[in-house]
Amino acid sequence: MACTYLGCRGWDYGAVLARDTDLLYSTLVLASTEEAHTGSYSLKLRSRNWIRFAVDGTPDNIAIGAWVHLAGQHNVDRASDIYIQLPNTKYVEFRWDGTNHTYDAYVDGGKVADGSVSPTDYTDWFNVQLYIYIDGSGFLRSRLDGVSDIDYSGNTIPATSSAAIQYLYFQKYNTDNSFYKLYIDDVVWGTDDWTGTCQVSYLVPNGDTAVDDWTASAGDSYSCVDEVPTSTSDYIYADTNGDETELDLTDWSGAGKQILGVNAIAWARQDTATGEQLELGVDSNGTDDTDTKQMVDAWTGYTYFLANNPDDSAAWEDADIDALKVRVEAVI
Image 1 (cartoon, rainbow, N blue to C red):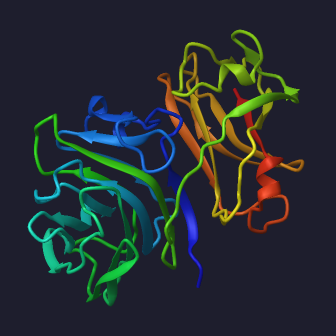
Image 2 (cartoon, rainbow, N blue to C red):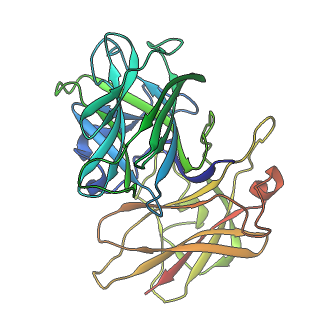
């Protein structure tokens, strides 16, 4: 069975694009050029900190792929934790073991399996893949740099919890020293099989289209939303229900690559607290596919992940991406 991809994150737009409720300390979670696995940016966590991503559909299993850089903290326990949250605030975790340079598996705070495989080079970027099934007869599995490691079978449901995965967390737990860091990049998650080794490419708007109801704060619409890092110094806005805008995107080089999904991203806010909504998504060859996002007053990041091309319900192809448009519509 192939993985059903649910989401991904890279940080080459130069911003975290996460709600404060999805970060422990928002001032210490940053898009950074200090280290990057691909592109120019990765996510940096300073001090004792975490970032989390909601898992759509609360499935009973999850596959996770990520690139991790421990920034000199490879000899310290819990320099990197990767874990999921279940109902009643219960957790299933993989924690870094600084002595053996492995990830160990935990259920509800108790260790159930020791890792035995170390990354090829734990002082540099390495790939982590996890596959977790929450069940009375579940499993916890791991791969480091493509090498199989933990293969635990047993009860993976913490006491008073249930098999409904709510959030995926990445955490630097080991110290409250703000100078110590953890970097993550090219994060992907899904269900039903391993994610494989992935990378996330970022395409910026590069042209207006005939669908252009939103008003640019200055100049062309696309030039107001093409900055890297992301900036709110210029923007596009709508004040009429049903206003829609579609923007062309830079082409993508798919040579030697397989497209696993498309993640539409917007950095947006409402101007008045009256319950405005944003329809965020894509136009693929004339077929629109959007998701409704509830606006808040503060600038906030919103995403919509599409595993397949909505135009033909098939896997994405290079030509599909080159013709793709990002789409926004106001619901006010």
